[in-house]
Image (cartoon, rainbow over all chains, first blue to last red):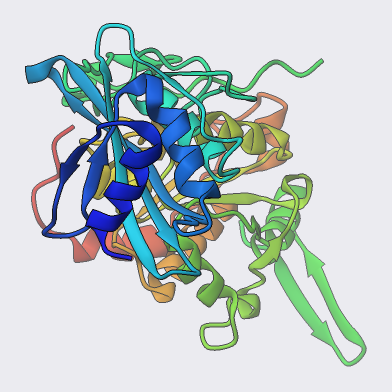
Length: 174
Length: 193
């Protein structure tokens, strides 16, 4: 199915959606309140049948005050692809979970929360995925400032002998 | 004080101080922890394989830190992994040695500007030997393991564990054959820092 036909099929059940043709995969941008609905249509409609979530990622766009959530989809049965996007408010980013539509979205959304600080609502297990649980901040935000140290480990190598740190001694034997 | 070994038709008798006899056993059974955090682990596996055959020196990999003498930091260490690496090190019985293998474990390497990477294994563990390379060849890792052997032979662990070493009146440490030849080879200015 051509991307335009996918767009027409989606807008027939969803209402107007912004469409960006290629190069590369064509993209459909929907408002965040239709995000879950659009995903459900793309997954459940037998003519679309996007049965494979290839990637779910984010793009920080501070210039327009938005974080884009980008979903790359593939249908093994129909051999067609599409990109589903939504823009969410950068100051309070929140997006509904797609993990009930594609189980693979579970960890992708945890990564989205980890690196962009997007609150994925009604996610079954929203914890950090790649970084430690007590990490401060979300590193893929453009305004992320790296802290000086994490749990006493400096983030830069000491430049002089005076700055050198000694690793902590092993705990006393009982 | 190397132990004196007298060979007889039925075997051999070793005579020496208890420390030197212990060191003879220690340095010829240097067991390393089979643990790798990134791609240097492939070279680590190759080192234990038949082509370089680290086993001929007594370097045998162990799957548990309880049985290991040496931990090899083979690869990039992330901050999430750092506490696990530290835990493995603390589970090892003393005396224990640390080899930092490859650029990532030495300084963070190509990931120096990356937020989740620890900028060198020596920020979390006391490193004994650094191996340069990205990744180092198995021969380089074998040399590092032999330098640890050298370090083992140079410290009387029984006395050290009881707090009686180092002592200026003690004949230990032994002069190092390996380090001496290294120092002779490197005739440049001493590096700063």
